[in-house]
Image 1 (cartoon, one colour):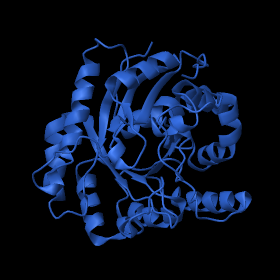
Image 2 (cartoon, rainbow, N blue to C red):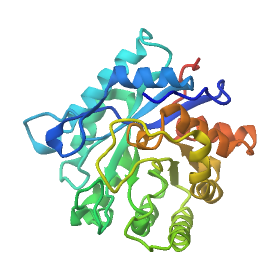
Image 3 (cartoon, one colour):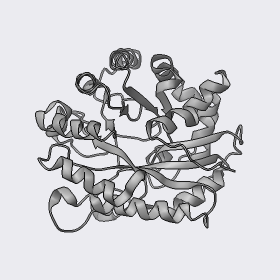
Image 4 (spheres, rainbow, N blue to C red):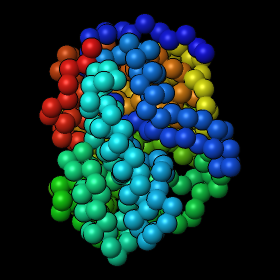
Amino acid sequence: MIAEEPPLDPGRTIIDPHLHHWEIFAHSGQQPQRFLFDEARAEIAASGQAVACSVYVECGQMYRPDGPPELRPLGETEFATGLAAMAASGAYGPCRLAHRIVGAIDLTSANAAAVIEAHQRVAGERFRGVRTNTAFSEGGLFGFPCDPALRELVASTAFRAGAAELAARDLSLDVWCLDSQLALVAALADRLPDMAIVVDHCATPDPAGPADPGARLALWAGRLREVARRPNVHVKIGGLGMDVTGPLAPRSGPASSAQLAERWRPLVETCIDIFTPARAMFESNFPPDRAAATYGATWNAFKRLAAALSEDEQDALFRGTAARVYRISEAPAAG
């Protein structure tokens, strides 16, 4: 196991707004791995980072094995609610895992309104929104081809109707898309200006984009700047450690926080410049980002990159923006 780094600025309270818990089996085509309650708790504790709480983000786990297809993802919300209850007991340390839940719902379903309400009944106030994976690249992702239906999913009439049901209930929408799809997110934001939309993983640059790194960065930044003109759109800064070109790695990579900061600086600084800290939040995206480094090194990298900002700006990036978007007002102090 790779040794963890000592935490930088160890007293800084963190809300991790993008944490997955899963068990991946060999038959899935990915490398087997487990990151459930005990594994996550141990990793956070070992990092020494002051993580007060986390937001569980859907990842296709623990679906019900039968029943109406649109209700099967309720199993994941039930699973996340169980994790949250364990953490909230205080018996496992100060970090409140799954303090808020971003679940999985097929927003194109004709029954989207009833399904949203079913998730709310399961998780109560913890249920704060839905994440839709629309990421599409011509070259595929994680070693698999992408479903062509994902390319323009958020532009479909059915999806827009489902998203409007979220907005009517003051719930947010997380979207994982590639930068080549950001124009569709902008159009959705224009249609639903009162709904918080969160673009995950810095709007992952499309690996099928320009081969020249400078041209790819410029294209990505231009697209990000355009979607950021919508004041209801936010960005999660992270997802930069995952390798979308192959199977998910089960173990942490060896990079140090200094190496990560050097590698990630152009994208991170661009996101902060475009969105400002008021609409940006750092995310661990663990366990996918463990392909690059440990949990502690990931947060240390963000601390290095934000060190020149004011205290208020740093607090927004590490805690405040996530607290506002996911309505976390009672997160316990970490330590």
